[in-house]
Amino acid sequence: MEKVDVLIVGAGPAGSSCAAIIAKAGFSVTVIEKKLSIGEPIQCAEYIPKLFLNELNIKRNFISNEISSMKTFINFNESSEMKSPGYLIDRKIMDRSLCLDAIREGAKLIIGSKAETFENGCILVKTKDGNNSYLPRIIVGADGPLSTVGRWIHSRNRAFVNTYQIELYKKGEVNSTKIYFFDECPAGYGWVFPKKETFNVGVGVGVSFKKNPINVLDYFLEKLHLRKTDGIRLTKGLIPSGGILDTVVRDNVVLVGDAAGLVHSITGAGIPQAVISGKMAGRIIVKSLKNNDIEILKGYDLEVLEQWGDYIGTSQRKREYMEKYWGKENLHDIIINTWVAYKEYYQES
Ligand SMILES: Cc1cc2nc3c(=O)[nH]c(=O)nc-3n(C[C@H](O)[C@H](O)[C@H](O)COP(=O)(O)OP(=O)(O)OC[C@H]3O[C@@H](n4cnc5c(N)ncnc54)[C@H](O)[C@@H]3O)c2cc1C
Image (cartoon, rainbow, N blue to C red; front, side, top):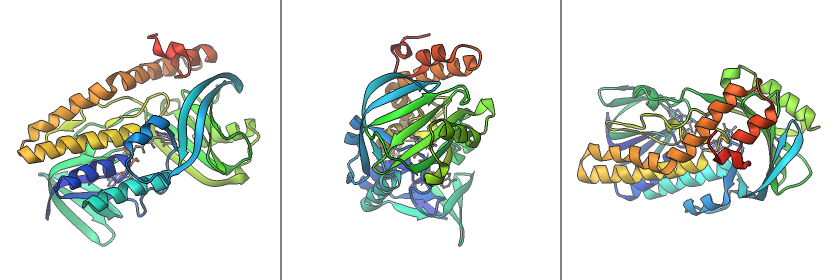
């Protein structure tokens, strides 16, 4: 059994950002990642807001395309255009850069290893070559929407948007993202996000509506006169949509990023919260280790609420409204009330 100061499960943006801070402070940190290759497969539409770039102290070679505005369509009619400065990025390069940064600071990364069980403070990790066990002082769940660490502390995401996306070759306008709300895509939307030479075209549907996103994407492509045969990559994945979990820290276990439900319930954006919560948790963990006081970890809960309580809380209420009235009220009225491009979003309904 290996003793470590911190064991982090998951080497996405949240886990790597957390690991870099802890390793830099001189504590031993091991990151467990079940994938064989960091950043792949990409499960992301790859948009980040411009301001978020300041949070990333890594080489900026992951930027693919600059975005200036977002256009919204309701039942395929253009309804609004708003300023939305940001970038389409290459998620694989970004995730790898964050991971390399953590390794450079001294974190240990074990790819192809899956955290399985947690008993008496000990974590069992399965790898191809056999099992390892770890006895960490602190555990970080950075393991995404269906967090295993969250299961151990009985705190998991329960509501999701189910997505399906294709990256395809397409000519055309390159500086706007396009969002499509249409009846066939319940409590979700379709998106067309332009990268340098390709477009991410995808759909997300509220899981409670039990609609297969593969069929919705086929319909969406047909409506936009796009061909699946121009595609170079298919992606699927769940996005948590139920808001911040009630418990993000319990005893010596801390949840970050998607594992903590830190996703905007309407837009599905979670990269900024993953990086920022990873760093936030990292700083509190360092303080707790330095003072040898686990109680200090409780401060993370408050910081999370201060930072995102309103932002994610509002999005969660808007999602509840959207799910309740989808298919019952006029689509235009629902979207005006629940989508971030309209002033009504910022007024309570
Ligand atoms: C289709 C789609 C489009 C999206 N588009 C955007 C977008 O444009 N902009 C945006 O801001 N957000 C977007 N998001 C959300 C964004 O991708 C997530 O919020 C972000 O990846 C969260 O980072 P994370 O580090 O918390 O989790 P993840 O990136 O999910 O990383 C978790 C890691 O944990 C690993 N793991 C899981 N379980 C275990 C285990 N038991 N043992 C070891 N390792 C484990 C996983 O393999 C994974 O590498 C999108 C999501 C989807 C699905």
